[in-house]
Image 1 (tube, rainbow, N blue to C red):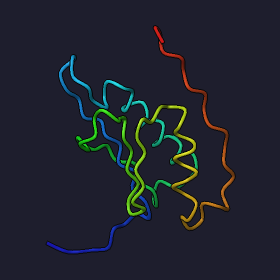
Image 2 (tube, rainbow, N blue to C red; image 1 turned 120 degrees about the horizontal axis):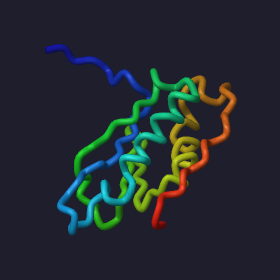
Image 3 (cartoon, helix red, strand yellow; image 1 turned 90 degrees about the horizontal axis):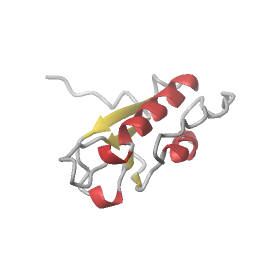
Length: 116
């Protein structure tokens, strides 16, 4: 086993925990969509090598979810919706080397979900 420094400046952990259909959980509130959008934006910004988007299991605040934790910042977002993705990205990359020099492309439109 080898010990190394963390290879990323930031890691965005998105809870995608799924429970039974009648139980509250992040997965029932679009967390998979949020994780995919975060990952797409980081890739579009060319920051995949310095910012990681990781799906996580339960972060133990299901009633407040979806939850996104930014490491090592110690920042926690709860009640996240797909429309919050751009703000989370902008907050997270503020101090990432090279991020400010990149043009920020407009956020992709959030597709409407049937029945909402």
